[in-house]
Length: 313
Image 1 (cartoon, rainbow, N blue to C red):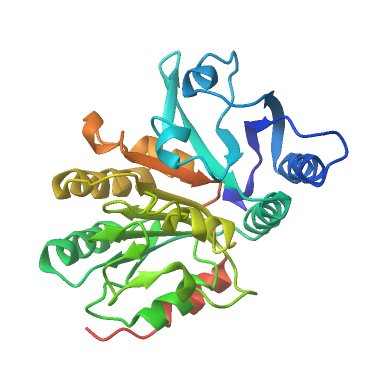
Image 2 (cartoon, rainbow, N blue to C red; image 1 turned 60 degrees about the horizontal axis):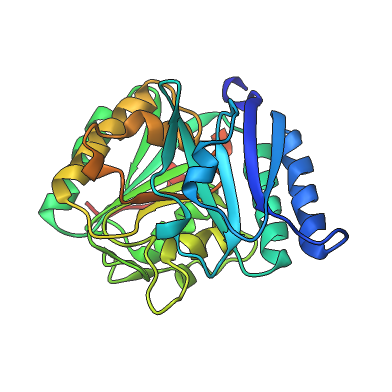
């Protein structure tokens, strides 16, 4: 499969755990999982805490960086951007909060599932709130993405939330939502929350982009929507904002996303770096949660199944 080749490298930046502890064992297990799909997996430790400056000063040439940290730390302070720049190259940086050792083990299972499955077609579910300013975006993207990509126009004016969930749980490689958002989820589809993904044996989504406000923000110290989806094994990676965003900026993201996919981007990190608008206000408030190397391609079987899901134009 053309898009099933190995990745070059990843840096796992993790706390120092006691030797022999469940967390240490699960981190080492995750490293072994990544080594099935990545040529070089580097494990770096930090004691007590870290600053984002510590990460940027690391001397390395990794393809992507994944920072692990206690779930008490918010995405807002965990990273200051969804990438860092080294020698003119943008390197995607992701954050993974964990509440206990089991979170690390579950994440390892998700990584193994998405990297180990067939990667034949680039499928993107185009999701939006039922409002003309948002449906115009997905309609335009649906018209543009007709060559190398299989677009699924699932805006909330043509499909029910339950059918969207059923489709995504088939193992869609990539999905993007446009509309209003909150720390607990999307406003579209009459409210879309993490608990709406109920099937425990479902295939995880490769990457889910919430191009809207606040879905990576915390409210009353509860996990954000983006964090919940990764820790619940619904997604390998999510992308969301820690604050309010501008519709014009998110429209620029939609243009960049089309370009990135048509240029052959194959991971969520690569998509974000290639799709990123030029103005800092458009990307500084966003965070990448989960696996920065999550593949966005799906199997032909999934492609066939999801294209048969009925919509109501």
